[in-house]
Image (cartoon, rainbow, N blue to C red; front, side, top):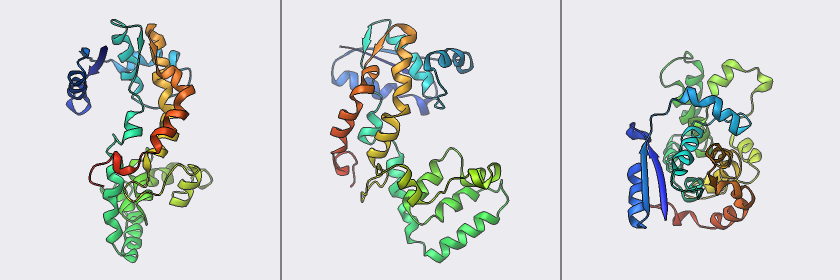
Length: 243
């Protein structure tokens, strides 16, 4: 079996050591490449192959991997979706970590919220106080990981354009995808439904066409519902240590 992986000089983004461990475990014919992508130069080609706006920087390495793999194979299996299905993101643990703010009395949290609202827009810690003051871990998670923090939305959007930020609204929007779980209130189900089953497969399913390499992601558009259903039945204790 041939395997391919790309890495970066920036160690914070380089996953080659982990790919190498996997390759050694299964004795694959492993190929590695450290890339120095000129992101701006790639944008026109990305737009051509993606066919639609795709606001995720992961499209760049996803575009480069099949180009490298095509030097050795013409059909490939991609690993997209593994983090969502098996708890690979640190956010799974961050959700539970932010439960520590539950120990803060509610009236103190209300004060923190008022203080955060009164601080100057660019004040250091303003968004953190807002996050800490939220009444539950779910709201804290979305305050922390949101691409546009609450105060930024408040600053640039008219009131009619701002969506609610409370947990009830989040649960209603995600339509039951957020499961009740003592360890992980976000759960794999939300990522599976909204990322793997949605935009997460667009890039890996279309990027291989740029180098005439067929990826398994193109078929997973059809098969993803079966895979997600099977994996979602795993209890949280099976994929997160320390539960």
